Image (tube, rainbow, N blue to C red; front, side, top):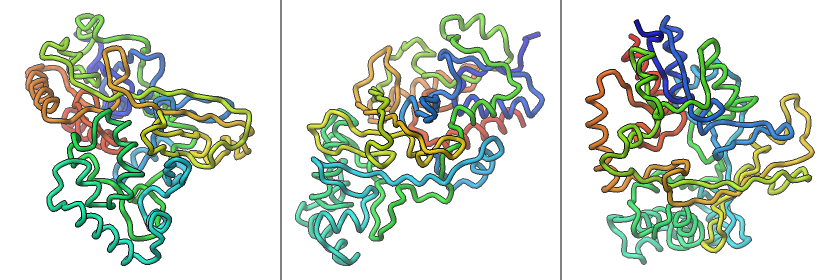
Length: 373
């Protein structure tokens, strides 16, 4: 007899939600993670009362009522609304692209004038059916905004010329002929009060968790513990990279604790010129309105400069490079995964897919329903 019904590899959102559902269904589960903390990339740590998003900013947003009600079972969310700012060589613009952006860029005042300006620039560029990211962006926002606010940022983020990137990457770009500064067009939005780590700890309440344990270093030993494995790590690593490495973009962070109450006045400022080496600066305290958990003003601030880089083994994989070559390679790995009888592959790395948090949770709930009944 195996000791557990499920061994869950990875204490991020997918693994934690599956573990919770398994526990609630009366199954025994062990969760392991190679890191020394739970919560995966949504991990938040306390620095001088500020909840710092250690692996990059995460803002919860969803139109999925089931998912929203599910997470609210475990923690209360605040009313944070994502309204980033773009900094182009000292010029500040609203993100998402809206009437404030168009007014500052062109001096237009009405939605009709803004739409006409975008159409004029799209026609001048001769774009009918966008074939790459550059053409898609110009068709959405015109040449001026593309040049100042999209091109440099995107090329830093992906390490590739915009003409070499697929159009679909930017199809979700929010463009509004209104003065709405809310980046996400989502019914539900916010940040867990007390941080994402607390959310995951509540999900894992009463479930055995072992940290700093690497499944791939002793897979036979771990597999002997449970009837089924839920694997949320990198799919190519699971198969010892036998078909080759899947590619990712990685991110490096430079964090600073500053002895001032306010550095930039906003949670996120994107640096959209090519010359500035970082893509954006996150000021974490503004995710919780500059207050600690007791509602007191925080006298210090923590900022993180984000640098995008090409992933290499040993780096943290962040964004899958979903181009033709990598998609074809992932498909081959997915075929191998289907043959692993007692292993369930799920989550961002196991499915080589960029997931928003609500989609990860929805996927984990669907997976749990399928296997737990």
